[in-house]
Amino acid sequence: MDYKNGLRGGYGRLAINPPAGIGLGGFGNTNSRLSEKVLDDICVTCTAISDGENTVLMYSVDFLGVSLNNYRIISAWVEENLSIPAENVFITATHNHSAPDLNFYKEEVMADWLGR
Image 1 (cartoon, helix red, strand yellow):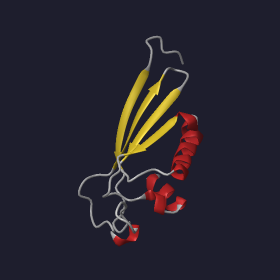
Image 2 (cartoon, one colour):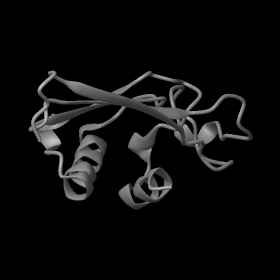
Image 3 (cartoon, helix red, strand yellow):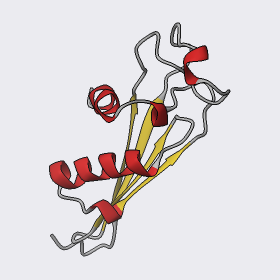
Image 4 (cartoon, helix red, strand yellow):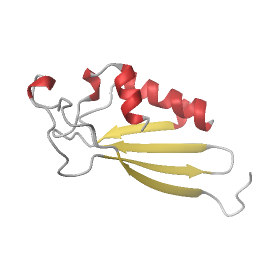
């Protein structure tokens, strides 16, 4: 697809609130503070930019951080399901101390939760 007028972009935001009882990160032992309810939504935001041949996705997630392993899982899913190369996927975290620290959860738990 050729965009004669330059770049095209899009934006989306989705609440991905965890289930109650999941450990919150940021203050030592993840299991010492468990979520009780949702006060404010935990969101993932994505900006997409394309020139018609290449697309870049930039994600911001309301988590404490994103490990390299979690980045690889997410970018591999994007590549497989959206046909956007993993190297065109960028993910950053807002460093939220009241959100789960996904670095402490098994890949299956994270994939199931984020796959909702």
